[in-house]
Length: 377
Image (cartoon, rainbow, N blue to C red):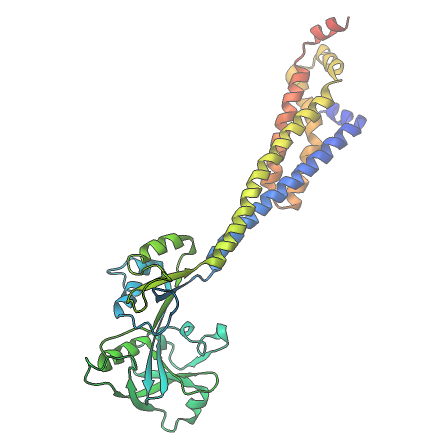
C-alpha cells in the first residue's frame, strides 16, 4: 500500500470519518433494502405455494354447493385429461354422493378425506384405515364410526341402499342389498357410513338413473395460474349469477382466492416500494462520492502539483489519492455486507460511491503542475 495514502488518512481524520459514516449509513440502508426485497420475494413464492385455493362448483346463483345432482360429465371435466384441459389445473378433487342405507342412515361416497369433517384431521376428525387404498378403491368397503365398528357382531355392514334423489319414473330397482366390509373407522360416534366414491358411482348406476354427484370441489394445482384456470373452467362451468332463474340446470365455479389476492397484493406493494428506494439509495451513493471526493481534494491542488513536480506520474498520483478516499468506505461496506448478509447491496453502494469519488479525484489531479504554479505566481 502507498505510504502516502496511509499518512494522509492519519493526518486528516475528520474528512475520513465523514466518508466512513456516510458510507456506513448508505451500506446499511442498501443492505437492508436488498435483504428485504429477497425476503419479500421468498414470501411471495411461499404464499403462492402454500395457499390452498379452493374451487367450488355451485348452482348458477352461487347459493348451494351440495345436493346439486350433477351428471358424471362434471366429474369427467375435472378428472379426465383425455377430453378436457381443466384437469391440468386441478389438485385433490373432492366429490361426494349421498345415498340412504336402510332408509334412514346416510351413506356418503367420498373421493378423499377432505370431503367430510369426520375424516379430515385438519377439521377435528381423523380416520384409522386398514386399507391405504380406500379412497381409490371401487370395492364394497366402508368406514364407520369407532363406536359402530366396535359393536359390529359379524364384521359386516349389510342392508339396502337407495338413492333419495333418483327419479323413480325411469328406474325399476330403487333399492340394492349390499354387504360392506369395514376398511377402517373414524373417531367418535354416529351411524353415518362412508364408502369410496367409485363404489358409490357403481351403486348409482344400479339403483338410479346414472351417477349423479352431490358436490364437487378441488384445489388449484398452481396458484400462479388462477386466471388460466378460470378461463379454462369457463368451457365447462358458468359464472355465478345471483339473478339467474331458480331451477336452472347450469352450474358455476367459484374460485375462493380472496385471501391469496390480499396477501399477494400486500407483498407486491412492498416489493414495488423497495424497487423505488433501492435506486434512490444508489443515486445518493454516487452523489455522496462525488461531493465528499470534491470536498476532500479541493484544497489539495498544491500538494498534488508538488507530487507531480518531484516525479510522481499522473496515474500513480490518481490511484494514491483515490485510495485515500476509498479505503475506509471499502471497510465500511465490507463490514455491513457481512453483517447483513447482503454483499450485493454493499457492493453496489461501494462501486457507485467509488465512481463519484473517481470523478472528483480525476478532476483534482488532472491540473498541470506547471499551469498551477504559474497561476499562483
